[in-house]
Length: 503
Image (cartoon, rainbow, N blue to C red; front, top):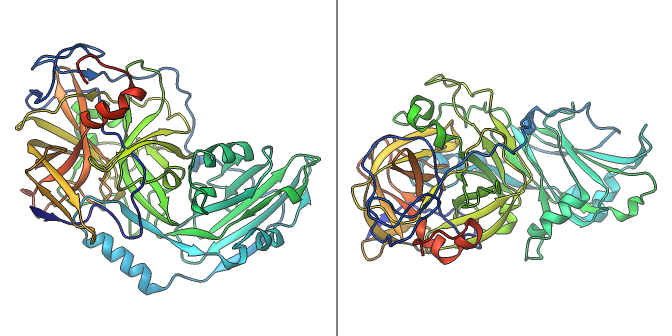
């Protein structure tokens, strides 16, 4: 058994998710798969023979609405004068330790980009009520606002702990000047929190997308006639990010920071379709912020439902799923430009965790908001390709612009994680595909990304990234990917639809 660096992360307890991969569209590169367990039947387009395995076809929805990135939304600032809470700079030692851990880790794991900070002044509903000074707006609404400063932060995420909030309330989070505006109604907040079976504070906390800079304003507006006494909320902690994810510019996590052997996905024209199914994923766990990668998945009915696949060691429970923010088209404007393309879209609103399975480290979610126009719903291969099959990877190493990797399946193995967070993968089992790269590699932040298997004119998701030791310095080391067909047979068929011969 080979020891790998931990696929988990400190302070995160795996809990609930499962599904597998997805991919689609495009073409090219490598031998077509001979399924090792395919049997009879036809998927959305054929399947059941060695050269025609069961599968779900990719598609592009024409019904999705186009909208601008959250980060481009701007108001005129808060409607009323906010009270103020200031947190001193983070302890230099703790921030440096977290950054060093990220920089030195070679396993494909979540990339930490921020850490939790307690906010004593808003620790409970009573303390927060003292900060919310209700005032009448020109529209006749009642509104109250509080500004939070986390000194030295590149950006900040606020978590609103909700005990009571009128459905008609509108909660806004923004910079003091009104930039990076996000808003949700009380009804929307309650609907997302109600999906969490837990009852602890994390389960009752709604996390807004990050706001660039060290200052963030929380504003709550009530319609005429509403009683402010019905608002019982708190901000017991915030996430202090040492990166500005809203703009992709930071000395720690900057565009182009991934290792030099990574390949710009914009340089691989054959797989530009598949790249439209891949998103960078930001989420919060226990108040700290992390990055992984995920893939938008197609179903048999081509319904337009935003099914989303990532790794269980990233999104491990509904509390984390509710914090999900996705970044679409997060890639370079042109090949090797190192400049973020203008199509990039940030999408907040969270997600619902539908299924999880530790056996393949899979997380299957439904996004709460539709992705932007132009995305691709990735198809999936519902049989395991034979050893030697060529695969491609599309991922966001260390949260960087989308990268491309080319390799092949070495074989299959089982992987287990011990109490120290190290992962061992052996040959006695077949839940994980072992992949060796001939071009490119993966890094922390690539976790959850899919490998695609070319078949005919399309390419299909086969598995998603769990752990590994592959790097620019160790190109012969394998990465391990959880198979997609296993959770499909177990449960995902109820969401994605039945494909004859796949089960």
